[in-house]
Image (tube, rainbow, N blue to C red):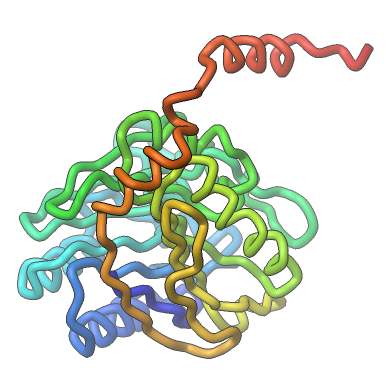
Amino acid sequence: MALISARPKIADKKSNLKIMEDYIKKTKADFYIFGEMFLSGYPCGDEFRNLAETKQGPSIKCLKKIVKEKNCYLVFGMPLKDEKVEGLIYNSAILIHPNGKVDNYNKRFLITFGPFEEKIFFDEGEESNVFETKFGKIGLFICYDLFFPEITKALALQGADVLICISASPSTTRKYFEALLPARAIENTIFLVYANIVGSQESLVLWGGSQIYDPLGNLRVKAPYFEESIITYDIDLKQLKTARANRPVLRDIRPEIYRDLYNMSRFHRGD
């Protein structure tokens, strides 16, 4: 896998497509992973509505050609139009397969506090699916989703081998992400791949530092902070069997707890 910590240009899809193409062509890998909202840049405000496209849009068509030529998989973030309801858009992670198939995950937990205003512009995603590839089953999630362990647990229980989190995390939150990333890997005995944007996006300064953890939470590779970079790592899925035998957390799940959690969350009154 190749993790790209790069700086997209705000509201300039043409330039960002060129950045993606250049990184893909300069390094050999089976997977290329860019950060959250890489196609558009992150803080675009009302312009997100004009920048959004469907999965059949011109940007994905362009990237499908590059992916086919390179015979690789590509993951990146973009504002995605709802294909049925006019005016709805999502903060989405896109997975393009070598054969031209396009899958997506729409961010379920939209960050709306401090400088972040995602609920103003985006609709919440409703599904967490696992996608089949030649290199195992892939689960996608986005940035703030990391703070909600139910997301990664749902993907692991559907048979995911690798979880990919794309992100636009500013420097003020780095310590939280670097605490939670290995925790999510350990509690699901799963490979955890994290790709973060780097550099300034208007008032935000993003820390980069893309990284990969193995199923026991060991850090396997890490990009430098605050620098554009591309790092690669070969994931060995055979480690999953050993990790899950030694620490059988998925075997020991108690499903009734999730029912209880639903009731506590749905009907709590604070008393």
